[in-house]
Image (tube, rainbow over all chains, first blue to last red; front, side, top):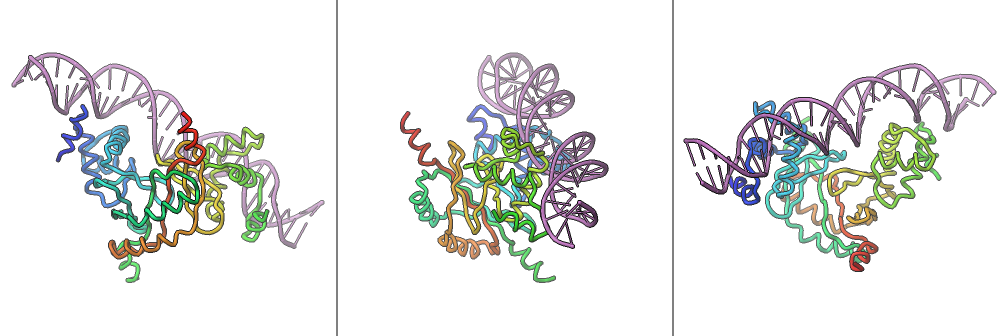
Length: 142
Length: 142
DNA sequence: ATTCTTATTGAAACATTTTTTCAATAAGGA
DNA sequence: TCCTTATTGAAAAAATGTTTCAATAAGAAT
């Protein structure tokens, strides 16, 4: 674990709440909302305060260790983000979120948009929704 | 206006609050959160209740007349949606949202993801962020 | 190990956003 | 104009997020 280092280098400290939130996110296959993280912590006898969850998420996002994803409905959750640029595909059945990477293909799209709109594109949000292999199987079994 | 018709065909009614929300969205160049819509209404002597704003937005979204967009930070607003499939590009300076359409180009990307992840892709969320022509100009002028 | 500095926590109060309930109202077909 | 019922608004409740501040504990220094 070099989260320790990463924090200390900036004068920040690795505390219990931060460890707990990281652990929970590490073992969650799906985006978790702050409330969900809090409840998970409570359930695993790792009581931390809800306030700390919020604060920790802000911090981890700042450090690019965690990424916010948007549900279909608008409410958002957080997932662990591996370094680099990614997007997520989210299962509409079970919520599982899987990363996918490197879409050079999108560059072309962006250029067209720039030309069309005159905007200077700076960043983007791309998420796919669908059904994961497992949930597809379950669907056909019924 | 054939919103009247569209509603009546389903046994729904065109009411004052619904008209007000539609009008506000029609003359807003940027995504508006429910609260913002409410305040705009109050400011223009068109008092309607906040509850109705929520309810109307749900309805309009249901009817695909309005679309939810996600801010960079996670909070969302609503914009008018022209029929068909679109995405939005949002100015990080002034908030202006512009639609762009028809990315057949994305189909290829999707196929690759399907192959890679085994997911059955069903829907997607794509938003670009950048600076609109006006805000670019203002930036260089300083 | 122990001390010291200060980043961080948690509790509580507060603020904001969203949802529910239900009697009163008004849209629009008859 | 009447009648049915979809819709509204007020109020209360629930859920979500933020602020404040004294107490705690991380980790560098001694």
